[in-house]
Amino acid sequence: MFSEISGALPDILGDFTPGAVYADRERWKAVPQTVRDVVVRDAEAALARAWPLITASDYREYTAAGDRSRFEELYFTRRRMLNDLVLGELVEGSGRFLPGIVDGIFLIAEESGWQLPAHNAYGRGGPRLPLPDNSQPVVDLFAAETAALLATIVALFGDPLDDISPEIAARVKREIEARILTPYLGRHFWWMGSGDERMNNWTAWITQNILLTTFSLKTDQPTRRAVIERALGSLNAFLKDYAEDGACEEGVVYYRHAALCLHGALTVLDSVAPGLFGKIWRQPKIRNMAEYIAQMHVAGRHYFNFADSSAVVEPCSAREYLFGKAVGSEMLAAFAATDRADAESPHLPGEWNLWYRVQELLTGQAIPKIEPNAACGRDIFYPGIGLFVARDGQFSLAVKGGNNGEGHNHNDVGSVTLYKNGRPFLIDVGVETYTAKTFSPRRYEIWTMQSAYHNLPTFSGIMQSAGEVFGARDIEVEFSEANARISLEISGAYPEEAQLRSYRRTVSLQRGRHVEIVDTHDGDRPAVLSLMTCLTPVITENRIDLADLGSIFIDGAGEIEIDEIEVNDMRLRSAWPEKLYRLRLPLAGKRLRLRIN
Image 1 (cartoon, rainbow, N blue to C red):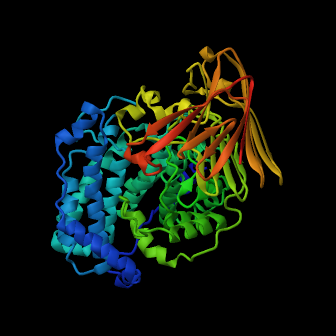
Image 2 (image 1 turned 90 degrees about the vertical axis):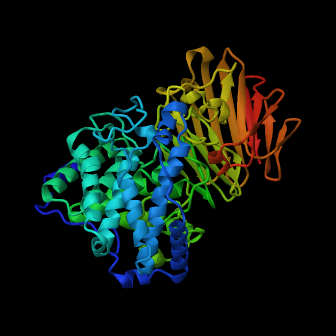
Image 3 (image 1 turned 30 degrees about the vertical axis):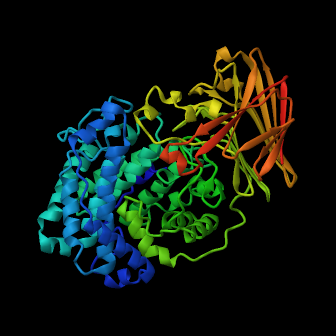
């Protein structure tokens, strides 16, 4: 899709300005006063705060103990503080935050490495080195994010920084040249794409920020051409692993680092080579990728989640709205506008990408409050990942097919997620705070990754296995006015020792009535079905009541057991209460039927 454009690039590739420059006081004064007040207050708080000290011991904590969170808290706090100071200065224009901005720039410029400890490797899945080697920089997600942050500051401020010292912009350019552009153009990193190797969100996310960095700075034309040609190749590699249906196999949280970063990359490309990329915006596949987040929405902050995504997601920002407009999706634009309007903090205080925050301040106030489009939240089946979604006025139902070799995979083939009246009924727990173990060969020792903690069966303790060969087959899908139904064979997701000949699951939404799950088992080991919920279950004969939300009527189960799970992890607690529950239903025979009212 992108490769054919390489030969049509203009001789002169233009500049990209990531927002209104500091001198454009009219644009910055147009930011609503209420938002300006909050932005300035955050800048004042950053100015009064001490910059975090980052030591070599903090960096080594990842390889020493597997802990990511302490270093990353220090690292991202620096960048958020710098963001806050920059935005405060942009909206106020008085010069009082400029010294703090310079301090932040130089602190970051003097870091030994911009890559996270968890990414400090020279090959995909290679050993993580305990300290960064500044003679051989690694271009990871956050090295590229850092470069984009510094390039955006230089592009927007210009003269005020030069008036303090021309060395500020010069230092930024030298650091970006050494840490980002030279390695980017001089070596191959796995996320750039190679043949049939599968790519993920890294490809679009890093490529967007490399383009933003290159074209925001006053780079020369040979550099710009070399960067854009390499970037187009990477974007091709990224798109090849998406099906035409546009579903993000990594889940809705990673949509914002994948499809939405493709939008960012295209935005830069469109600006520097006008007229060349219009046909890409119009591709049905790109539109499908854009609309995915709206199709996954349930109610409020709740989304259908799988893989490493949380069930609770931050509100949309201007980015989703702009993506909808760019691909001609009024549905996505309306969804994003409505969702954004409910955000408590429209200036994105938790975001470390400065360009996103600048976009929000400059374009956010122009986004109309629109009634959600009826097309949002419709029934849909994504064959690329085997994801089925169906709804009526009461229930929102998702069933995950696919396989266990997908990006950020959990062993969840055939799992059901159900909401009733916008409230979670049967849940996908999500993922705990990332550690070294999360992305190691021991990943599936973590309980949240295991099929026994999804709404799936286990056979004498034998769970699903990881890998692309372990997946669903014989999927049948039907949508009608009265009914939505998926039937799939999930025995192939289990290893041979499960001694399964067949495990057929059929899930149907009888619109306006109930949801039904029918599991048919043919195998030599006893089957026990797990059901995960965040509501306290009460069991009576052939019935499970989940608080005030509803009931599950059971036909074909033995004595049900309940496991109470304490939730102490902060990432899980952002979505769930302090206790979760796993119901274990042994199949009494070959068929188990659940009717959910």
